[in-house]
Image (cartoon, rainbow, N blue to C red; front, top):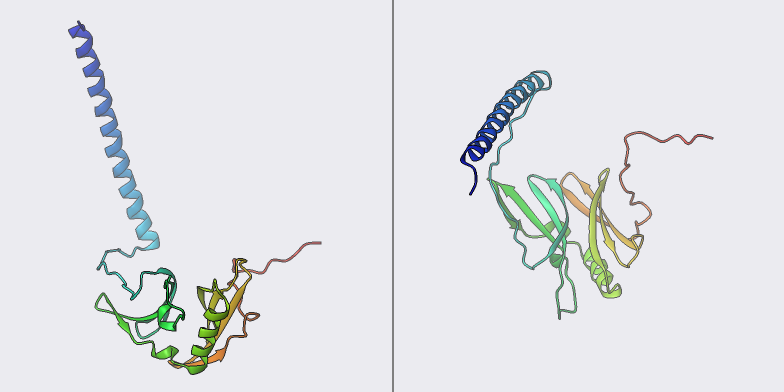
Length: 194
């Protein structure tokens, strides 16, 4: 049978420790609030708030890869999809255009990608490369690059190039792999020492 005096002593120790930890927590919270107020006075603050939660739905079950704004609240989404028994992949199976307004996404027709030469190059890409899959968008100056992986190596790429001029898109071709560059990792140039 436990000793009632020892049990009371243990409960008293617990209460003392709990009271100390509660007091230290309140002190720390007060000091953090003062520090945060001083930080906001020096650096400023932009309050954040969740305005809405909305999902983008695509025609097919897909794996999204990249999206890029194209102006006017519109953006182009690129994704990969497994189509199963279909023999031909269309641009609408890989890209979708959306308008974002009033905290909602509306799908738009793929009018900017309506170029006969692009459609022919796109179909050839998926016809001749069995494992072709969309990888990334990139903008360099006024040009939009669409990068596709066509093999197992990360260097097995095919790049389509578009000229985006004043809201008008013009397809330039698919032989621009040499022009595509990853963005610099640093904002300065490394100088090699000798």
